[in-house]
Amino acid sequence: MKKLLAFAAGVFLVANLYAGEVQDITIPELRADMASGNVTLLDANGTKSWKEGHIPGAIDFKASKDKLASILPKDKAAPIVAYCGGPKCVAYKAAVKAAEQLGYTNIKHLTAGISGWKKAGEKMESGS
Image (tube, rainbow, N blue to C red; front, top):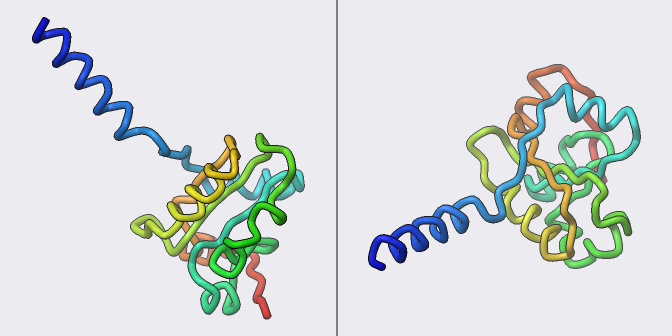
């Protein structure tokens, strides 16, 4: 019985560790999704950074988080990509959590972030 309880506790712990994790997406994969016009981008770098430069079409998460439900697609399975500064940045997690709480199920993380996007020579857009 003790072994069974220990096993169940272990499974529960592992499940909780991976709950809320999102799949990573690469720059080439994102570029392809953007070309199809079927992706929503959430920039979690903050409004100042967003104004200075973001991936074209990205939503300023910080400025929009209170009205996210009216901005995101009606289709809860629509692809959403959240990103922040780069591979070590974790600010994207707030955007992921907000989208998950609204019921979205197809959320990915651009691990390279805005720094990787710039380094790759990809197009940028500034905001106002």
